[in-house]
Length: 286
Image 1 (tube, rainbow, N blue to C red):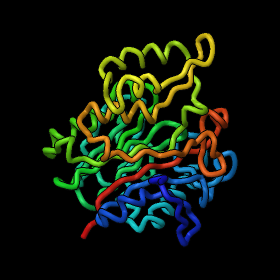
Image 2 (image 1 turned 30 degrees about the vertical axis):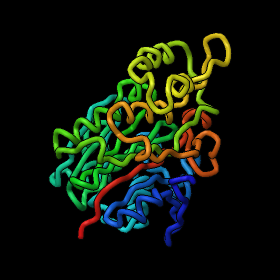
Image 3 (image 1 turned 90 degrees about the horizontal axis):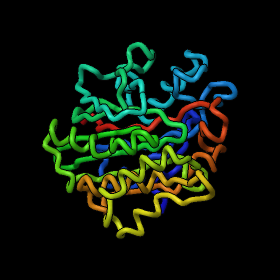
Image 4 (image 1 turned 120 degrees about the vertical axis):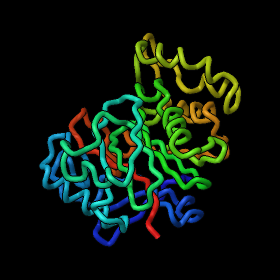
């Protein structure tokens, strides 16, 4: 069953919360936005959450406010960062709550992963094909969110996020539940030798995990000379397992952002001129 279930809010914004998590952990809010239900004009139509893509900043902030309203959280709790395709993780204390929600200058700088154990602090990251990674430790009540393009993936940002949660909160990977959200699928993600050479360096570390060597090899398929279809979702799953998350604790989407431009923005499908979805996670205040 698809873990990210489409849901329309009263203000017209369409989001995709992680349904099973919402049922099991009512104190937790996590999911992914669609492109539907905002105020941005084309080519950012219409729920663009990215301030960095050339859209009218006032429209983006309105969209972010609409999103917070749809999620039932204060806009002041929405915390954003400037992402750089790295693996740096920010521990977000309550003093950083709301960073970047209405301005790039005020965002957390050069961070692609975020963790917090503070109720009422909601983490947001932006996507238009890259892979959103979600982490929840129900024992120590801590959450994490990471942005994994191919660079962040081979840098193992999933493992870096878990290590940061461990250092900050005492999180043990075996206790963590994780999810891999809507992103470009292997069906549409063609890469070259330069990318695959980085993936190949990582594969020996993953050998034998999540179904054996065949499961690891299947993270990419050679299509022609120097061209491959890469499955970033499955590669991140293997990295999570290597880091100690139980395979049964990982939810993985079947949604491809490139296939579903009716629902999502896709940087690759739309030739780089498009908006951004937001992934979010946070603990509700009691």
